[in-house]
Structures are given as structure tokens and as C-alpha cells.
Image (cartoon, rainbow, N blue to C red; front, top):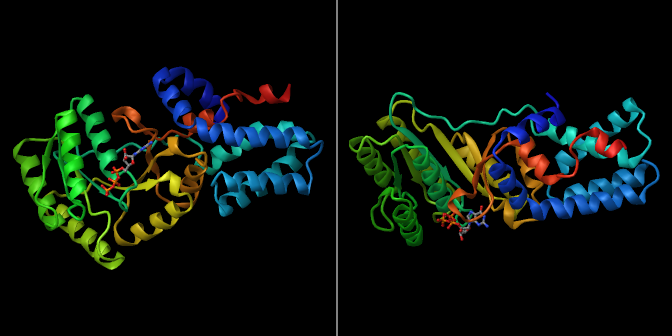
Length: 330
Ligand SMILES: Nc1nc2c(ncn2[C@@H]2O[C@H](COP(=O)(O)OP(=O)(O)OP(=O)(O)O)[C@@H](O)[C@H]2O)c(=O)[nH]1
């Protein structure tokens, strides 16, 4: 179903709070992207090579990425030909539909996997500072709100601060944290976490992992070991391996996605700090270029600023004025 049809249904159905979260969180990207596009559409009388070139620059500076931008422009040229569009201003709804398609259109809002026969185990991977610990705290809060019994394991033993930070989150939201001292073997901490979660009949165990070791090889070996321990202790686990990427690092996030996917089977991406950048186009690039679904996005530091990624809400927050094709055609 096309974007505008879903928009009518989804935005009216979804609680206003979610739509507001997306709009507030993406306001920086929206104002810079829409501002630049409005200027472009107003300053061109016809759709020519200069117009396409300027549109390319706008998309790339919003961190949509070169590959995704090139593909978008290619599809736009075809649409312009097919629909015999003359006015640049008529392009905006077409552009939004194409962005929607590039982001896999139909809202397969990727659900978080659960183990309906017992303990669900999530691993969180990603480099230091991207928001891993914060994301674990926010997700623990979300699951607790849903009535689930949650336990967290402080597997990022590389940085002492990460252990304390997770403990702070645990105290704040009333969730147990299983830890050892800094420098301990992450796989041993996560093994303890699994035993504790089982004995406490928890529904879900959220595991932080090392954000950095001496070098990439050690880090990747470490992650493979954690993965093996989890898979041995609970059949079918880990149920999610969530790679946490910082949206403010732009195209670097794509490089990290490729690196981590070589070491462990990443099942989903959490894109954090989208509220902290005007280059939220990175979500489009990640969604289109990585074959891994963006499952969650971080729209702020508060516990309920972690939202399930939803293409319709995302594009509506970027282009809030465009409710349907007629808005622009008129
Ligand atoms: N504005 C904003 N800040 C965020 C978001 N997610 C995390 N942060 C902040 O980013 C900073 C780093 O977050 P951490 O959770 O410590 O990063 P980390 O990846 O856990 O770092 P390590 O624990 O070393 O792996 C903290 O100040 C968080 O509050 C977000 O979605 N929006």
C-alpha cells in the first residue's frame, strides 16, 4: 500500500504521543531537509540537469548516502518521464513515495523476536559511545512497562563506566543487573546473567557487550565467544543481536554495520541520537543499503525516547506538511 494511504491510516491510528515523539525527535532533520527542498522547488521553473544535481547535493548533505541518492534520482527520472511531470513543485509527493519504496515501503515494522517457550536473550553490540548502555536501559524500561520480568547483564567489562552506567539504569527503573568487575571475561558475565535470569524466571535478558577491546580482531573474537555461550545455554538464543549505531556519525555508521555483521549475525539495527542531528537521512541509507532492518530508533535521552522504527512515521515526521498528493498538486 502506498505511503499516503498508510499515512492516513497509521498516523490517525497511532497514539498522538508516538507521532509527536517522531516529529520532535526528527525536527532538526525535517527543518534542514524541507527548507533546502522548498528553496530548490521554488527556484526552478523546470526539471533539468541542474535541478537534479542540486537535489542530489541536498540528499547527500542530509546523509542519505551516495548509492541511495543515485538510485533515488534514477527512479525519479523514470517517474518524471512516465507521469509527464513538468513542474518541480509536483515532485515532492513522488519523492516521498520513492523514499518510502527505498525504505522497503510496506510497513513490515520489524517486531523484536521473543522466545515464547522461555527466556529471550538479546545481545547489544556496537562501539563505545553510540548509546548501547542507554538503549539497553530504555528497552528494559519498555519491556517492564509491558509487564515483563527483565534482567540486564553488564557484559561491557572493557569500560568500568559502562558497568556503573547500567547499574544506574537498573536502580532507576527497578531492574536487576548482573555484573562482575571491570576487565572480567564478558562471556563469564553473560553466563552468570543467563543463570540468574533462569533462576529468577525472567522473561528477557538484555546483555551489554564490550564496545571496544585492544583491536578489532580481539573484539570480534570476544563477540563470537559470547554468541557461542548464549547459544549453548538457551536453544535458539540469542533471539536478537542488536547493533547500536550513532546517527550523528553519519556514513561511518554504514561502515560499522558492515564490520559487525562479519563477526556476528546482526538481526537488527538500533539507530540512536537521531534527535541530535540534522542528517537523519542516514536512516534511509542504513535501511536501504544494509540488508538488516532498523528495528529501533533513539529520539532523545529519556527512557521513553526509544521508539520502534516505522517508515510511515519517519517520513511523515520529515515532511509533515505533505499529507497527500493534492497538497502539492494544488
Ligand atoms: N540525544 C540523545 N542522546 C543519546 C541517545 N542515546 C544515547 N544517548 C547519549 O549518548 C551518550 C552515550 O551513551 P552510552 O549509552 O553511554 O553509550 P554506550 O554506547 O553505552 O557507550 P559504552 O557504554 O562505552 O559502550 C550518553 O550521554 C547517552 O545519554 C539518543 O537517542 N539521543
